[in-house]
Every structure is written in structure tokens, then in C-alpha cells.
Amino acid sequence: MQFIVNDTLTITDTTKLRTPMFKDTPQVQEILEMERKLYRALATKDLDALAAGLDENGLLFDFDGQILRGREQQMAMFKAFLELEDAAFEWEPVEAFVSDSQDMAWAWGLANVKLPGQKTEVFKYNSVWQKRDGRWQNVSEMRNPFRG
Image (cartoon, rainbow, N blue to C red; front, side):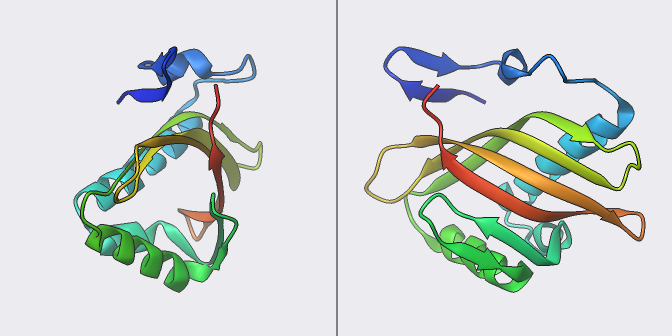
């Protein structure tokens, strides 16, 4: 995946953005794969798989200032987005961290967002994950523009 931030900055290898605190553990890889799994679900329009990764009461702090509360509001946003022509949304996680108790985690990454009639913009996102009944759920996500 390629992220064209501006005329002088294109990112093709997101691993180069990782911080010194990154530790490549099986638990971290599990979170990174959960991020990719949600992206694949959106890309293939598998709304059931997408919904399964979102917490029932999760929050999404979107780049435009709105707060979506709960899986139902988030899924309504994703469904509406998928109906748009000339729109695209893709993301790649950069790094993740899992708590010592292994029931809380966070990840951050980059996203390309293309809305109808607009150019593609690069955003950064931060996701918070909680493990409940043995399953990871996305409980909070925040998105905002990436400037490099």
C-alpha cells in the first residue's frame, strides 16, 4: 500500500514509521492482523465480519469532528460509504502495543481516504482494542489528517 502525503513525501513501507518502543511479539502481530482483517472485511464488503470486530458500545472519533457511538452508528457510516461512487478507504497498521494483562491493546496506522469529487487524503488513526470473552473488539478509534 502506498501513501502519498504530499509532493515530496510518499510512504511505501509503513514499518519505517515504527517507534523504538515497538516489540514484535505474537500478541502484537495478533492486533496488527485484526486491523488488517477489518480492512479486508471492508474491502470485500463483508459487513458481518466488519461488525464482528467492532464493540457494541465502541466510539469512533472521525476526522470531521463527529463522534459515532456504538457499532450501529459505525456500521451505518461504513454502509453509506460503500454506496458512494468514486470513493475509497484503505488502511495499514504501523505498530501496536498489548498490555501485560493481554486484555487491552492499541494500534496506529495510516489510511488513504478518497471521497467523491475530492483527491485522496492520508490520515493517521489510533485504535484501542479490548479482549472480551477471548475475542478482541475495537472499542475506540480516532482519525485525523497526517502531515508527515
